[in-house]
View 1 (cartoon, rainbow, N blue to C red):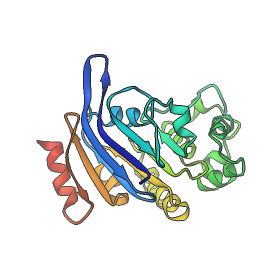
View 2: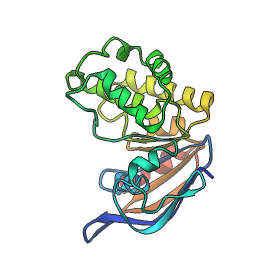
View 3: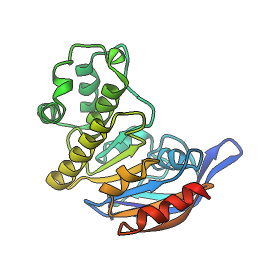
View 4: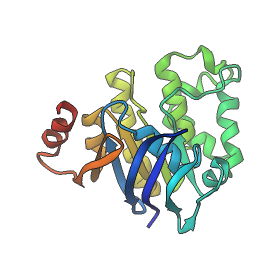
Length: 230
């Protein structure tokens, strides 16, 4: 088991946002967590990655219990993360943003590989990241997450606000990284079509809980969409 989370509870101050959520990810698996805004998806991810403190539950990554670990220590287990917000260092160049990822133990040769994957970045290495378009910043965030092909890549609304051509490119990249290196992906999305094209299993969050889950198959999209309407 690559990721095992059991009975997770998390929130902000006295407000409980995630209530008794459990999930698992096997090596090489792609799993998506779907739900509307405000259902607790991002809070769940941050609690798994040590970015906010859990108030209950346990998490194991790569066979290690990571309860109480800071985010940077969890990242060194081989975890890449693309947050929902365009989390780039605006005053630094594109190249410097990518090189900062080397601190999690990524070999410098991996930079060449990720630039081959996203040639648009190769031509902008000396440009300030803050001057990139919104779509280009999303590309940079995804490039940082997959740099070095970590064992687990966590993506939070990575295609929000990007044009369809970039969405299709992201699908190709995720499939390639998954098949070539065996990286597992945990994808949090409102874009049902994008997520279900990639994932073999889905979970639906509503009101901070998992209300539906199962294998991705014919009819899954219709079943999931009902949760977005009701």
